[in-house]
Image 1 (cartoon, chains in turn red, cyan):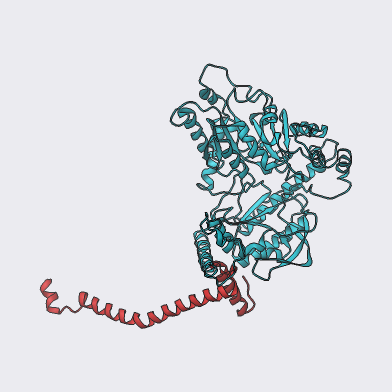
Image 2: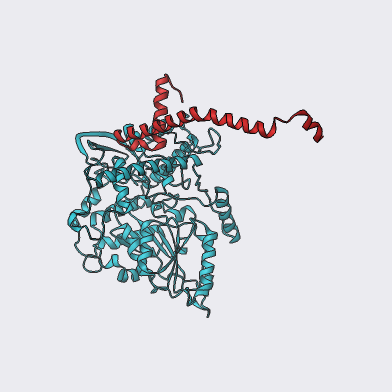
Length: 80
Length: 547
């Protein structure tokens, strides 16, 4: 599809979103409810991932380094 | 719902379908038929997921709105339970009512549009708007003029108001009046009815025929007259509602075989003949095979004789042929045609009736038939004459008012035109025009990447889509019929284009042009089939390459 401007493209994207979710048949106030719920959920997902993902990653790193790494050289030679 | 292969879920891919047909044909040594494979391409998975997602979201909002109505925050515009009937059986709480209130209402403007002109190739629509999201409509007083009509089953363009063509109809109205006020069996039988029946019998190649005033009732009321308890009906899974209703009313046992699948039918037939009725294992009194091509009469086949001609069948092989006058003939009603002796060639040997039936099952001979056609397979099946039997036993013959003379004359006029009785070639030209339009339209849509269903020569073209389609098309002055759940499975909502011989190439090109745009806008081009960008179309000189 050829678009002249960015707004045209965005309008098309929004229209596709309306069609795919089926909310083009809803009344405007229902649409806004749906959109705000969706935005809220996505914002919460973004926030929680911002807050918690670094912690989880750090913990995971610690855990795996405890499992695989951290062995001293003498232990390796002893095993071989 | 309709033409022989309009709708359908596909069991197995194209290749298996075609293959099975060929096997049947060769196995029986039948003459080589022109076989146009039908395609039932499935839409890709993501479309199904998105459709269910959309339905889910709208359904959730439906529950939300119903909740608001229940607590009194919103007024319910539809019928609902009355306060004083609180303890009665609930009337408006099933899914159908929920669906009407919360899903259908939102898109109701796509259906039941009022028109204000002859539904020819173009018509005028009365513009209407809704101020309360489709709960009520208000006519603006304006008309939307010259909307291309892709929704009428006006295959040959005989729904017309040309005074020259309709002169005989006017004459007959003056002669016979507008109605008879009596059923055929009593005093409503006019000479013009007899004339019609002889003509139809000649047209479809049967020996006798009976005409009824309503196509739907022709099916649903005559099947109970033919079969009853202790009989078996083998019915195609995609048969028209009228056949389904008739089969259910008859009280016979119904078994359903896969759409146009001869293997499935043969297996069921063998089982039925071998095991007989359940529990008692007595042989079935009659076995009736029902297939459908109701919408084909006048529209397909080189001379418009319907699917029987398309598949090069001998009409004598079909014992009961039913068809409608509503579509190609621009009239109303239906007919049943049959031969005087239903099954003349049955070997008269002393075998149980059920085994005798086996000899006479021409399995290869009926891919699909004219009208709802039935095969009667028992030698003693009815009385010697099918149509006479129906005249006295069928409900629609006994109780229904006779066809009114102007309608009868319209049918006669059109049929004579198609047969070329008075030497004109208009009928045959229109049939050829329709075939050409069909091939052109279908091949162009396939090129564009739409998924279309049905046989290549069927003038009814269903396209898979979303609902926003109909609105978008009306904005472009094209009137289409869209069908959705519950008439189709949820994932197979479709638009049904009905081509007509009256459509000119310019009109079709306009429709195709807008289809292309709307298809891009709505992302409707689901087809994943790789086809050459411009496959061989058909030999025609003025075929222009525009797109």
